[in-house]
Length: 109
Image 1 (tube, rainbow, N blue to C red):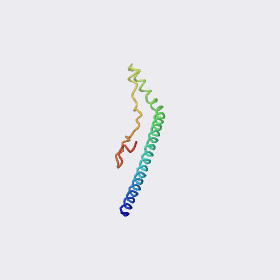
Image 2 (image 1 turned 90 degrees about the horizontal axis):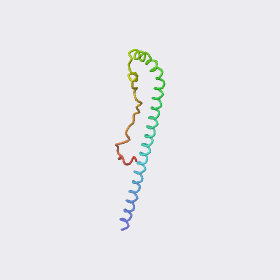
Image 3 (image 1 turned 30 degrees about the horizontal axis):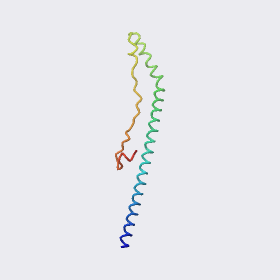
Image 4 (image 1 turned 135 degrees about the vertical axis):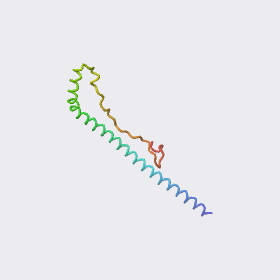
């Protein structure tokens, strides 16, 4: 009789210890994922700043290159809208935050 009671208590303690270990590992994974998302946000922000700086530094060159084109357009009496060429938009690569791995997506909230 005491043997069954002791086995039941040992089983309950083992289950609790395994649960704590799994929860600790889960929290470590969530911390790592959170840190990686923070790093991604920082890198995207840095990319946007560098892209803006590159566009600003390239603006005088584009202006100088567009002067002869503007003179030709004025000679041909074209509209001002024909002069305006769309520049490449500032695109920032974003990744989805859906992570498919051993953890379900509801763990990442």
